[in-house]
Amino acid sequence: MIEGSVRIVGGREKKLQHGYPWVQRGEVSDVQGAPTPGALVRVLNFRGEPLGVGTYNPQSRFPVRLLTTRDEPIDQAFFEARLARALRSRERVVRDTNAMRLVFSESDGLSGLIVDQYADYLVVQVRSLGMERLKDLWLPALIEQLEPKGIIERSDMAGRAEEGMEPFAGVLYGEVPELIEIEESGLTFLVPTDAGRKTGYYLDQRENRRRLAQRVRPGERVLDLFCYTGGFALYAAREGAHAVGVDILPDAIDLAEVHARRNGLEAHWIVDNAFDWLPQAAEQGAQFDWIVMDPPAIAKRHDQKDSLRWAVWKLVYHALPLLAEGGRMVICSCAYQLSLQEMIDAVRLAATDRERPLFLEEVTFQAPDHPYLLQFPESLYLKCLWTRV
Image (cartoon, rainbow, N blue to C red; front, side, top):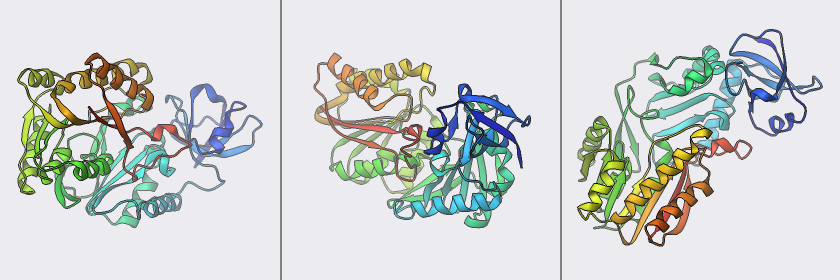
């Protein structure tokens, strides 16, 4: 039910018409009808002409999130149609796995909603108050179209506070085991549903794990920093590499060891802070042919960009002494706030300070089931630099 309307200041409507779904606070000129936080509203241009329908939350940095530019009801059928479209778009780009991102928020026209499929189960994240209030519409659509055995919500991220919501985690439908077994490229992994990072597994790195496996040679030494439950390390180990995984989370390392055993692979696992471990390993003369570093989002706001640059510089600076001559380093950042060029500059400065020439061979991004909508730059967040020393 639409509770009111929001008028946008002149000159700001074109980006909405072209596919950008967010309206910032300074772009709202007038609110009519006293809509309650999270309610559906009509979005109008400065002349009062309709631009579409979205959700409204005056507390948010983005008080309006556009759902559609058409005059259509936001009901269960709307969500069923969006979900069907998202599924069709993934039919040709997701292969050799039973785990994928089904709904990628704004990129799939459902701002504030994330849906990941792990085998017969779904894990959802609700990132906006508007999508929280629409749960009675999109949850039945998920159940009807996908027929999962269970759905669990993992909306336990700090970012919910910006929307005026408390973190939440709990089962929404059916029953969900603590660990879900998935398959990816012939390997099996266990996804923790009640803990762990993101929704339990880094689906967005799938194609990069496969790319590493294609390039690693038997006998090479591979270091997987921030390894979580062992993804990159296990792909490398299957190719005959000597893999080492480092992560600060003991539970993640425990699960990485389980993954190695279940897949009949050998790897060495270390519980430590990668920032502390790197200089210690350098002092001990450790050498690797490959170093993969995929740190979690160290900072998520624009005003924290300097700390992001510093973290990238520090990691590369302390990792370079461990990289053998001719070795390769894969540096990843999952923070949209740090642009590709800024990331390259930080890596360049670290290599210059170490007096080791570093060549950029390739740049890769998130897996295609996390689609990058060109009209929404924020949807391109994961960047990986494939470099050679």
